[in-house]
Image 1 (cartoon, one colour):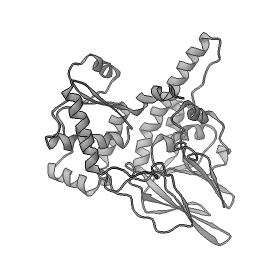
Image 2 (cartoon, rainbow, N blue to C red):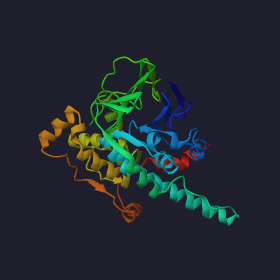
Image 3 (spheres, rainbow, N blue to C red):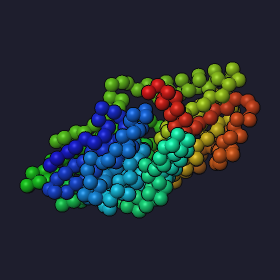
Length: 351
């Protein structure tokens, strides 16, 4: 058995692990490097393996830093199955084409700039067509079912409580009659977070591979988060300003909407307009609402009590670019939830 760390080591993005056993090769995650320019440039480097030699890919969840290089992998020769939970498959169907759109747009901008200085044409990391084609290789799996991936490798997906559909992986490897259990944490959620179920407990492992982005800090209590959000909103509105919140499309946006609903329902914030200005977040929220089986008991009880998903009359959805541009002309205070990528230019300015 051999395990290589090909990402998420000395940095927190680009998750990718190569497991070899009995002559077969399996990838655990195939994520994109995100953040500063020096990290994003790693995505354009050749893979440290031959994609055609990989038998299968096991995805922990749909965040791009865990699945964002799948289209590149498939384009370069990987023909095997990509195993993921049902909800992760549904999210990947919107996340990967959206990522491809960004790759194509970035390449077009870089090409235009290059031509002005006699440069060459820049090709995108992968295209929308590459992303759509890779989705045909996805295979949905269920939590807690043991799957035979290769003759020597089995896997069980366990609920990680990170985002909807997320999992940590129990991988069982048997070589020469000796069995070992490896546990890949992926991204683990906090107990007690809104909407989704808590992560389940794992029982024992021979090797534990943990991604510990927040392993050196304590998270604030849920009520503290709500208090801080209410304070920021009320202070901004009192001054006649707008509160702009960059949020990940999957997970953070839905959690924000949950907090905003609770604060508004309890009278802790006013009827200030709440504007969701991210097509990807809108699509992801609709996937959330289709998969209520993933919700925790508190959210299920809320749905049972109200008979439907709670509504906020002041919530506005920007479905088009024109609707988004029109925000520049609106008057009065508002809470605007937009894509987390809006801060990338600020990040680049420091590196």
